Amino acid sequence: MEKLKILVVDDESRMRKLVGDFLQREGFAVLEAGDGIEAMDIFYEEKNIALVILDVMMPRMDGWQTCREIRKESKIPIIMLTARGDERDELQGFELGVDEYISKPFSPKILVARVEAILRRTNALASEDMLRADGIELDKAAHIVKIDGKTVDLSYKEFELLAYFMENQGIALSREKILNHVWNYDYFGDARTIDTHVKKLRSKLKDKGDDIKTIWGMGYKFEAKL
Image (cartoon, rainbow, N blue to C red; front, side, top):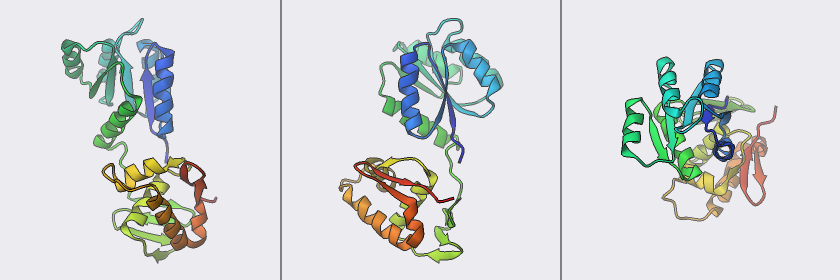
């Protein structure tokens, strides 16, 4: 699955790097611009940007004008970043069609969570119902898994775990992240339950179970054989 592109626009290179690093860690492709003019050049060049993170105070062309220019062409989701906590700024942002408004300083983790929430809302993160890799076919709608055409009987959590692995193929996933996604944030058990489920899942997948790699001290990664 092609990575979704996020355009990060901020005149502070350290801020761009901080935000970019967190987004890349979550599997997004990041494009950077140091001001509004540079941002618009990238925007016109790259036709499939999923979301823009836009600082307000920038040289040459500020965030407000950049937002206006983008809105002339597209309804792409926009998150505005600002050092101000002024309500008038926030109202102006929403009048311009801004989807989210975050004041600096902010938690990069919260920003990434907002990005993912907006993309889910706009269906950009809606994953395909059918996932395929290395002879494994996973039908999310029908809740069926087949290996080389033969149905495999998985429990609900094993199915969710395999779907999460296949959706994030090639990405290292921590046990905490797996717990949060598959067992949800309100789960208070420990990470050993993941290891137990992975062991059972590998066994049911037989030789395809080798596609689930252990990353010692961290978690797991799904890497299908070519």
